[in-house]
Amino acid sequence: MKLSILMPVYNEEERIADALKQALAVDYPCEIELVVVDDGSRDGTGEILGRADDARLRVITHPRNAGKGAAIRTAVDNAEGEYMVILDADLEYDPQDIPKLLAPVLDGRATVVYGNRTFGSHSAYSFWYVMGNKGVTMAANVLFNSYIGDLETCFKLMPVELYRSLEIRSRGFGMEAEVTGKLLRRRIRPYEVPISYRARNREEGKKITWKDGVEALWILGRERARRRPRSR
Image (cartoon, rainbow, N blue to C red; front, top):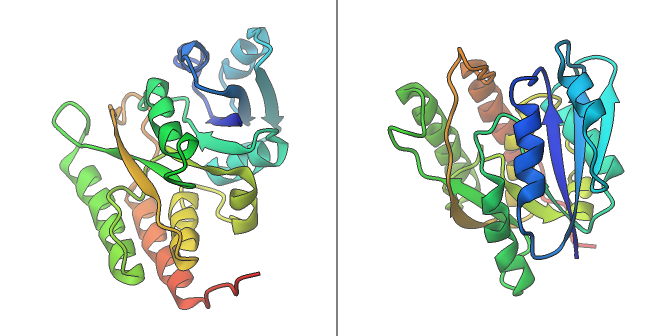
């Protein structure tokens, strides 16, 4: 199996070099590629990516910022692996956890795996951020009669063809809710494994806001109202 690690990047010149180094240093149990999409960065991110040299790395550039969902769509369109996982470049997630997500797939226990964050004082920068995440996750559980622990997690591992079939249209952070809503509507329940996490704050470049939470709730309601696709 080949795993495509998809990394959307926007104005991360202070972290992108470390993000690449950490992602490529992991001892993966399978072949990997790292597909980085520079989503119209205006700082030195592009120059740093241009100097990166690793046969497993491919860099694609958007001429202007289009949002996380659009960057992931570009990465998925160019992915060559059978499976994919999203890894943000902000160093909040530890790529050393990716083999944990792969384990249930490689031993046949799961097809879709989510990394479930455990929030604590060292891993969440605000009370409202955590409550917002829990509120959106609870809404998904109520709407779809499911029980997942972390809808907004970046670590979503699944077959590339499955993601393509979801036809995700959200251009920004709403893609997280759209992916989960469409999976649950198909009665695909993610297998969850615990992962480490350290949220950065606004001063460090945290981009998600309360507006993204409202959008996520709207997207979940929209997906619940749609008919479930017929099995082919």
